[in-house]
Length: 103
Image 1 (cartoon, rainbow, N blue to C red):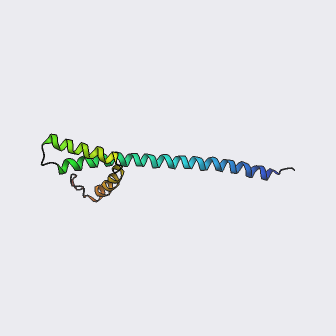
Image 2: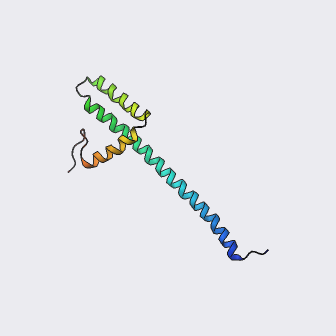
Image 3: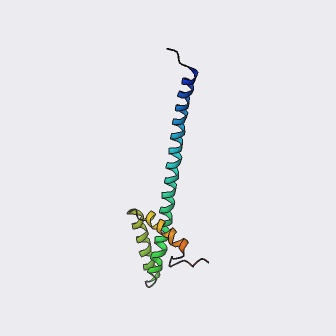
């Protein structure tokens, strides 16, 4: 059975669309991974600064230890990306207690 040139072209297009789909999936996967890592880092920073802010009544050594333990715990238990997302919202609304209000 002979194949027409249009059938060959369609098969080639299916193959190239497969590569495009895999490429888009990979790009989106990497973008999501980078966003999660960025939120985790920002969440760890927000956790540390909030813990220092609320532990001001303690001695500087105790406040630093409390902040470090809270930060490590938030990263280990997976709360840092959530804190990062909430911290971004609070930052842009000007409601972070340790930061100056913008505007």
